[in-house]
Length: 367
Image 1 (cartoon, rainbow, N blue to C red):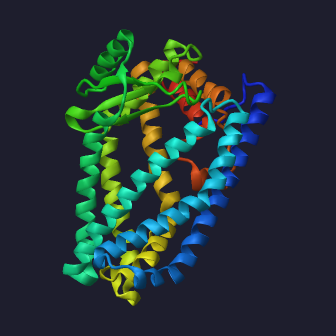
Image 2: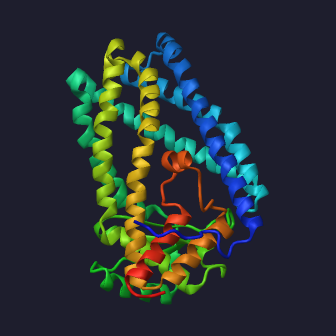
Image 3: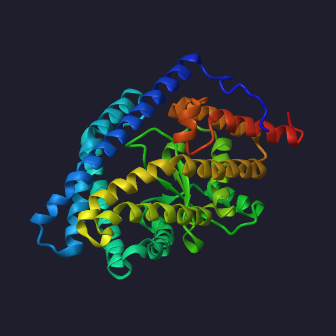
């Protein structure tokens, strides 16, 4: 049981009001955008099959064409929400780049999503040709294997540069304390685009990395606070959270793909291209339904990494300062509404994270 704490202590009321206002807008924008995406896909699921009459691309080629059309329709439905969210972030000083830079990035992301959808349909429709009704059972290990491959390769695709020597030394010391192998630490340059601080752990085996955004190292956060972040991200590696995330992905994928197979069976299953629009709707709707459960697992991993960071740095004061600075610098609402927390939050709230630091302090006799 976490102790009661005042997460707003030391924060100006104007900052708290701005953070609440900022995140409230983004929450409802997200809800509206997902409803719009579902509405577009629902219409496409009913009417999209007619495009098969005009295609001469073969069974899988037609399926890919339908997948790309569906993705393009969803992208168009999301564009107004993404633009207004970008405007909102610029208004609050969290996005530095121009609208043109954002649009170019959006096009690159759309291209990557096109490739993903085509690859997904290539695998599922090829399996459906052999297994028909049980393709989804065979698809799970295939996609899990690809997830492992991506997790391994991803760190090599990130453009970065080595972290400062003092952080690399800290990482080596922290790795010994967490009884794990050395992990490389690198810095990504994001300050031209955003002022939001961020860091993440990724990679498997020899590709394990910790990436810190340069927005964490621009002087707004003390060295002690950055050490807490570093220990937290290393905790994801030492507690094998990436492996566990892939295992969780496998557990979620089984009912998700099973649901897609069941729903599309009336249209010939994914063997038939005309089932693709319905499959896209089922995939997105199912993912949204599972999101609260997925977020609960993510919050559990993040809480464990927070506790590991406290055990590693033994600096609860720095941890509390860091979490309050997330409200100051990234406008994170320290006490989000319950529905938003359960449905959308991938991390414990600022209030919970401060309470955990206080609980650790009391448990270890530091007040």
